[in-house]
Image 1 (cartoon, helix red, strand yellow):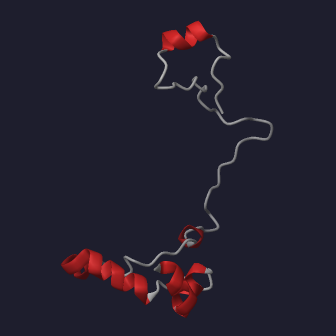
Image 2: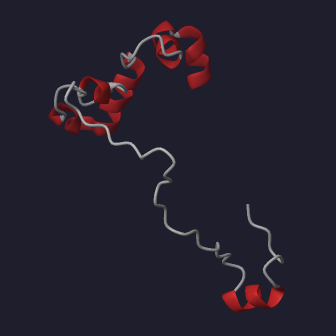
Image 3: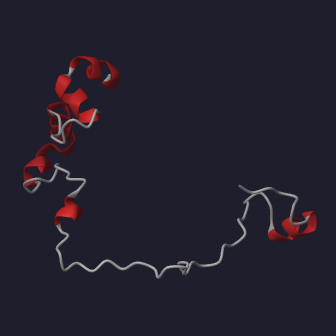
Length: 102
């Protein structure tokens, strides 16, 4: 259904191609249908999305924290993955290289 609509609905196609951020009427109608009477309770702009809104909140006095040069971020140590098909005892008995993990 959506694939065919992309061929015929220019508004939807422009939205998917990133040419516009305006929500196509197809989706507005679908949201209205799904929400029913609750649609009237949505605040203004509830179905709009600005992917760059955070950029607009940046001011000249915004502080940006960066790691010092040559320093690595403090990350917790990686734990060995647990495979639900093997108990820890079986994994130990099979040896560390018995099961390869990505």
